[in-house]
Amino acid sequence: MTVSQQIFVNEEEQKKPQKSGALKMARLAQRIVMIMLGASMMSVALEIFLVPNELIDGGITGISIMLSHIFNIPLGILLTLLNLPFLVIGYKQIGKTFAISTLFAVVVMSIGTQLLQPVHPITVEPLLAAVFGGVILGVGVGLVVRYGGSLDGTEIVAILVSKKLPFSVGEVVMFFNLFILSGAGFVFGWNNAMFSLIAYYIAFKLIDVTLEGLDQSKSVWIISEKFRDIGEALTERLGRGVTYLDGEGGFSGDNKKVIFVVITRLEEAKLKSIVEDWDSDAFIAIGNIHDVKGGRFKKKSIH
Image 1 (tube, one colour):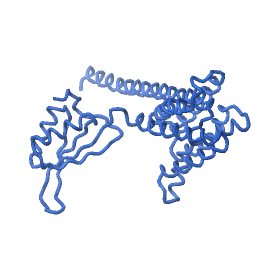
Image 2 (cartoon, rainbow, N blue to C red):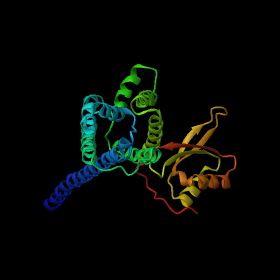
Image 3 (cartoon, one colour):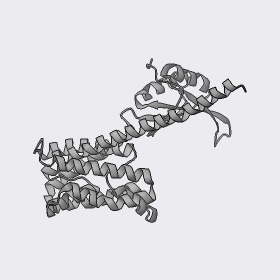
Protein backbone atom coordinates (compact mmCIF):
# COMPACT_ATOMS: atom_id res chain seq x y z
CA MET A 1 0.00 0.00 0.00
CA THR A 2 1.38 3.41 -0.98
CA VAL A 3 1.51 6.43 1.33
CA SER A 4 -1.27 8.15 -0.61
CA GLN A 5 -3.48 5.05 -0.32
CA GLN A 6 -2.83 4.86 3.43
CA ILE A 7 -3.80 8.52 3.86
CA PHE A 8 -6.98 7.88 1.88
CA VAL A 9 -7.87 4.90 4.08
CA ASN A 10 -7.20 6.89 7.25
CA GLU A 11 -9.40 9.72 6.00
CA GLU A 12 -12.21 7.28 5.23
CA GLU A 13 -11.92 5.69 8.69
CA GLN A 14 -12.09 9.13 10.29
CA LYS A 15 -15.24 9.99 8.36
CA LYS A 16 -17.16 6.93 9.54
CA PRO A 17 -17.26 7.78 13.28
CA GLN A 18 -18.17 11.37 12.44
CA LYS A 19 -21.07 10.20 10.30
CA SER A 20 -22.16 7.77 12.98
CA GLY A 21 -21.87 10.46 15.65
CA ALA A 22 -23.94 12.89 13.59
CA LEU A 23 -26.60 10.24 13.09
CA LYS A 24 -26.69 9.52 16.80
CA MET A 25 -27.03 13.22 17.59
CA ALA A 26 -29.88 13.54 15.10
CA ARG A 27 -31.68 10.58 16.65
CA LEU A 28 -31.10 11.96 20.13
CA ALA A 29 -32.49 15.34 19.09
CA GLN A 30 -35.52 13.63 17.54
CA ARG A 31 -36.09 11.64 20.74
CA ILE A 32 -35.88 14.76 22.90
CA VAL A 33 -38.27 16.73 20.70
CA MET A 34 -40.84 13.93 20.43
CA ILE A 35 -40.77 13.13 24.14
CA MET A 36 -41.16 16.82 24.92
CA LEU A 37 -44.07 17.06 22.48
CA GLY A 38 -45.76 13.98 23.94
CA ALA A 39 -45.36 15.15 27.54
CA SER A 40 -46.65 18.61 26.60
CA MET A 41 -49.70 17.08 24.95
CA MET A 42 -50.46 15.16 28.13
CA SER A 43 -50.20 18.41 30.11
CA VAL A 44 -52.73 19.99 27.78
CA ALA A 45 -55.06 17.01 28.05
CA LEU A 46 -54.94 17.12 31.83
CA GLU A 47 -55.18 20.86 32.54
CA ILE A 48 -57.32 22.00 29.62
CA PHE A 49 -59.76 19.09 29.42
CA LEU A 50 -59.76 16.47 32.18
CA VAL A 51 -58.87 18.11 35.52
CA PRO A 52 -61.18 21.18 35.18
CA ASN A 53 -64.06 18.80 34.48
CA GLU A 54 -63.09 16.50 37.39
CA LEU A 55 -62.16 13.63 35.09
CA ILE A 56 -59.16 11.39 35.61
CA ASP A 57 -56.85 9.07 33.71
CA GLY A 58 -55.67 5.68 34.93
CA GLY A 59 -52.45 4.86 36.74
CA ILE A 60 -50.31 7.25 38.75
CA THR A 61 -51.82 10.19 36.87
CA GLY A 62 -55.31 9.32 38.10
CA ILE A 63 -54.10 8.91 41.68
CA SER A 64 -52.31 12.27 41.44
CA ILE A 65 -55.45 14.02 40.20
CA MET A 66 -57.54 12.65 43.06
CA LEU A 67 -54.93 13.49 45.72
CA SER A 68 -54.54 16.97 44.25
CA HIS A 69 -58.29 17.49 44.55
CA ILE A 70 -58.50 16.13 48.11
CA PHE A 71 -55.44 17.81 49.63
CA ASN A 72 -55.22 20.86 47.34
CA ILE A 73 -51.63 20.04 46.31
CA PRO A 74 -50.43 21.20 42.87
CA LEU A 75 -50.83 18.39 40.36
CA GLY A 76 -47.35 18.87 38.92
CA ILE A 77 -45.69 18.23 42.28
CA LEU A 78 -47.67 15.03 42.86
CA LEU A 79 -46.95 13.74 39.36
CA THR A 80 -43.22 14.12 39.98
CA LEU A 81 -43.15 12.73 43.52
CA LEU A 82 -45.33 9.71 42.87
CA ASN A 83 -43.39 8.74 39.76
CA LEU A 84 -39.95 8.97 41.37
CA PRO A 85 -40.02 5.52 43.02
CA PHE A 86 -40.94 3.94 39.70
CA LEU A 87 -38.04 5.71 38.01
CA VAL A 88 -35.68 3.88 40.35
CA ILE A 89 -37.41 0.57 39.59
CA GLY A 90 -37.31 1.31 35.87
CA TYR A 91 -33.60 2.07 36.05
CA LYS A 92 -32.88 -1.27 37.69
CA GLN A 93 -35.26 -3.38 35.64
CA ILE A 94 -35.18 -1.77 32.18
CA GLY A 95 -32.10 0.44 31.93
CA LYS A 96 -30.51 3.85 32.17
CA THR A 97 -31.83 5.24 28.88
CA PHE A 98 -35.41 4.38 29.80
CA ALA A 99 -35.06 5.97 33.24
CA ILE A 100 -33.57 9.19 31.87
CA SER A 101 -36.20 9.44 29.12
CA THR A 102 -38.97 8.84 31.65
CA LEU A 103 -37.57 11.41 34.09
CA PHE A 104 -37.36 13.99 31.31
CA ALA A 105 -40.94 13.26 30.21
CA VAL A 106 -42.31 13.47 33.76
CA VAL A 107 -40.51 16.75 34.44
CA VAL A 108 -41.82 18.30 31.19
CA MET A 109 -45.33 17.08 31.98
CA SER A 110 -45.18 18.42 35.54
CA ILE A 111 -43.90 21.83 34.44
CA GLY A 112 -46.54 21.93 31.72
CA THR A 113 -49.38 21.29 34.16
CA GLN A 114 -48.11 24.09 36.41
CA LEU A 115 -47.89 26.56 33.53
CA LEU A 116 -51.33 25.65 32.19
CA GLN A 117 -53.11 25.73 35.54
CA PRO A 118 -54.35 29.34 35.14
CA VAL A 119 -55.65 28.65 31.61
CA HIS A 120 -59.43 28.29 31.31
CA PRO A 121 -60.74 24.95 29.99
CA ILE A 122 -61.85 24.83 26.38
CA THR A 123 -65.09 23.03 27.29
CA VAL A 124 -67.06 22.33 30.45
CA GLU A 125 -69.07 19.57 28.79
CA PRO A 126 -67.87 16.32 30.38
CA LEU A 127 -68.39 14.17 27.29
CA LEU A 128 -66.48 16.53 25.02
CA ALA A 129 -63.73 16.81 27.62
CA ALA A 130 -63.51 13.02 27.89
CA VAL A 131 -63.33 12.52 24.13
CA PHE A 132 -60.86 15.25 23.20
CA GLY A 133 -58.89 14.91 26.40
CA GLY A 134 -58.58 11.16 25.80
CA VAL A 135 -57.44 11.68 22.20
CA ILE A 136 -54.74 14.22 23.08
CA LEU A 137 -53.61 12.23 26.11
CA GLY A 138 -53.40 8.97 24.15
CA VAL A 139 -51.32 10.49 21.35
CA GLY A 140 -49.05 12.20 23.90
CA VAL A 141 -48.42 9.05 25.93
CA GLY A 142 -47.95 7.05 22.72
CA LEU A 143 -45.24 9.43 21.50
CA VAL A 144 -43.35 9.22 24.77
CA VAL A 145 -43.51 5.42 24.83
CA ARG A 146 -42.58 5.18 21.16
CA TYR A 147 -39.40 7.16 21.79
CA GLY A 148 -38.25 5.20 24.81
CA GLY A 149 -39.89 6.75 27.87
CA SER A 150 -42.97 6.46 30.05
CA LEU A 151 -45.34 8.82 31.81
CA ASP A 152 -46.75 6.40 34.34
CA GLY A 153 -45.18 3.89 36.72
CA THR A 154 -48.09 1.46 36.62
CA GLU A 155 -46.64 -0.43 33.65
CA ILE A 156 -43.35 -0.98 35.49
CA VAL A 157 -45.17 -2.39 38.51
CA ALA A 158 -47.29 -4.56 36.23
CA ILE A 159 -44.16 -6.08 34.67
CA LEU A 160 -42.82 -7.04 38.10
CA VAL A 161 -46.15 -8.38 39.37
CA SER A 162 -46.76 -10.44 36.23
CA LYS A 163 -43.50 -12.32 36.86
CA LYS A 164 -44.82 -13.62 40.18
CA LEU A 165 -48.52 -14.02 39.41
CA PRO A 166 -50.29 -15.92 36.61
CA PHE A 167 -51.49 -12.70 34.95
CA SER A 168 -50.28 -10.81 31.89
CA VAL A 169 -48.98 -7.24 32.07
CA GLY A 170 -52.14 -5.98 30.37
CA GLU A 171 -54.38 -7.76 32.88
CA VAL A 172 -52.46 -6.31 35.82
CA VAL A 173 -52.63 -2.78 34.38
CA MET A 174 -56.35 -3.22 33.74
CA PHE A 175 -56.91 -4.30 37.35
CA PHE A 176 -55.00 -1.32 38.71
CA ASN A 177 -56.85 1.13 36.50
CA LEU A 178 -60.30 -0.27 37.24
CA PHE A 179 -59.54 0.13 40.93
CA ILE A 180 -58.30 3.70 40.39
CA LEU A 181 -61.22 4.68 38.15
CA SER A 182 -63.63 3.24 40.72
CA GLY A 183 -62.01 5.47 43.32
CA ALA A 184 -62.92 8.46 41.14
CA GLY A 185 -66.57 7.65 41.78
CA PHE A 186 -66.12 8.36 45.51
CA VAL A 187 -64.07 11.51 44.91
CA PHE A 188 -65.79 13.15 41.91
CA GLY A 189 -69.10 11.27 41.67
CA TRP A 190 -70.11 8.26 39.60
CA ASN A 191 -71.12 10.24 36.53
CA ASN A 192 -67.62 11.70 36.32
CA ALA A 193 -66.13 8.27 36.95
CA MET A 194 -67.99 6.90 33.92
CA PHE A 195 -66.86 9.82 31.77
CA SER A 196 -63.33 9.14 33.02
CA LEU A 197 -63.68 5.55 31.83
CA ILE A 198 -64.57 6.85 28.37
CA ALA A 199 -61.48 9.09 28.38
CA TYR A 200 -59.30 6.19 29.51
CA TYR A 201 -60.63 3.87 26.80
CA ILE A 202 -60.09 6.47 24.06
CA ALA A 203 -56.57 7.19 25.33
CA PHE A 204 -55.81 3.45 25.46
CA LYS A 205 -56.81 3.04 21.80
CA LEU A 206 -54.93 6.14 20.65
CA ILE A 207 -51.76 4.91 22.36
CA ASP A 208 -51.92 1.79 20.19
CA VAL A 209 -52.53 3.83 17.05
CA THR A 210 -49.59 6.11 17.86
CA LEU A 211 -47.26 3.20 18.59
CA GLU A 212 -48.23 1.18 15.52
CA GLY A 213 -48.77 4.10 13.15
CA LEU A 214 -51.81 4.87 11.06
CA ASP A 215 -50.31 2.88 8.20
CA GLN A 216 -50.07 -0.34 10.19
CA SER A 217 -47.94 -3.08 8.70
CA LYS A 218 -48.98 -6.69 8.24
CA SER A 219 -46.93 -9.83 7.77
CA VAL A 220 -48.22 -12.33 5.21
CA TRP A 221 -47.39 -16.01 4.67
CA ILE A 222 -48.55 -17.60 1.42
CA ILE A 223 -48.28 -21.29 0.48
CA SER A 224 -48.91 -22.14 -3.16
CA GLU A 225 -47.56 -24.31 -5.94
CA LYS A 226 -47.34 -21.14 -8.04
CA PHE A 227 -45.17 -19.37 -5.49
CA ARG A 228 -42.78 -17.97 -8.09
CA ASP A 229 -45.52 -16.35 -10.18
CA ILE A 230 -47.24 -14.95 -7.09
CA GLY A 231 -43.98 -13.62 -5.67
CA GLU A 232 -43.06 -11.86 -8.90
CA ALA A 233 -46.56 -10.38 -9.16
CA LEU A 234 -46.38 -9.02 -5.60
CA THR A 235 -43.01 -7.45 -6.31
CA GLU A 236 -44.16 -5.96 -9.59
CA ARG A 237 -47.63 -4.74 -8.59
CA LEU A 238 -47.14 -3.85 -4.92
CA GLY A 239 -43.47 -2.98 -5.00
CA ARG A 240 -42.83 -5.28 -2.03
CA GLY A 241 -39.84 -7.53 -1.62
CA VAL A 242 -40.72 -11.17 -0.99
CA THR A 243 -38.79 -13.97 0.68
CA TYR A 244 -39.11 -17.63 -0.25
CA LEU A 245 -38.91 -19.99 2.72
CA ASP A 246 -38.60 -23.77 2.70
CA GLY A 247 -41.37 -25.64 4.48
CA GLU A 248 -42.68 -29.18 4.91
CA GLY A 249 -46.31 -30.23 5.12
CA GLY A 250 -47.02 -31.69 8.55
CA PHE A 251 -49.74 -33.98 7.20
CA SER A 252 -48.47 -34.85 3.73
CA GLY A 253 -44.73 -34.53 4.35
CA ASP A 254 -44.37 -32.78 0.99
CA ASN A 255 -41.83 -29.99 0.54
CA LYS A 256 -43.45 -26.58 0.26
CA LYS A 257 -42.34 -23.09 -0.65
CA VAL A 258 -43.65 -20.34 1.63
CA ILE A 259 -43.80 -16.73 0.47
CA PHE A 260 -43.19 -14.17 3.21
CA VAL A 261 -43.98 -10.50 2.55
CA VAL A 262 -44.72 -7.37 4.60
CA ILE A 263 -47.45 -5.00 3.44
CA THR A 264 -49.60 -2.19 4.81
CA ARG A 265 -53.20 -2.81 5.75
CA LEU A 266 -54.27 -0.68 2.77
CA GLU A 267 -52.59 -3.19 0.48
CA GLU A 268 -54.22 -6.27 2.02
CA ALA A 269 -57.20 -6.40 -0.34
CA LYS A 270 -54.98 -6.00 -3.40
CA LEU A 271 -52.62 -8.74 -2.20
CA LYS A 272 -55.52 -11.16 -1.83
CA SER A 273 -56.70 -10.25 -5.31
CA ILE A 274 -53.25 -10.90 -6.79
CA VAL A 275 -52.97 -14.29 -5.08
CA GLU A 276 -56.51 -15.19 -6.15
CA ASP A 277 -55.64 -14.43 -9.78
CA TRP A 278 -52.84 -17.01 -9.74
CA ASP A 279 -54.10 -19.62 -7.28
CA SER A 280 -57.58 -19.57 -5.79
CA ASP A 281 -56.64 -22.44 -3.45
CA ALA A 282 -53.52 -20.77 -2.02
CA PHE A 283 -53.14 -20.70 1.76
CA ILE A 284 -52.81 -17.15 3.17
CA ALA A 285 -52.08 -16.18 6.78
CA ILE A 286 -52.00 -12.48 7.76
CA GLY A 287 -50.87 -10.99 11.06
CA ASN A 288 -50.28 -7.51 12.51
CA ILE A 289 -46.76 -6.28 13.22
CA HIS A 290 -45.74 -3.16 15.11
CA ASP A 291 -42.62 -1.97 13.33
CA VAL A 292 -40.72 -2.52 10.10
CA LYS A 293 -37.24 -1.27 9.22
CA GLY A 294 -34.94 -1.84 6.27
CA GLY A 295 -35.76 -3.63 3.06
CA ARG A 296 -34.77 -3.08 -0.54
CA PHE A 297 -38.10 -2.22 -2.12
CA LYS A 298 -40.07 1.00 -1.82
CA LYS A 299 -43.81 1.16 -2.10
CA LYS A 300 -45.17 1.58 -5.59
CA SER A 301 -48.61 2.63 -6.69
CA ILE A 302 -51.03 -0.27 -6.51
CA HIS A 303 -52.16 -1.41 -9.96
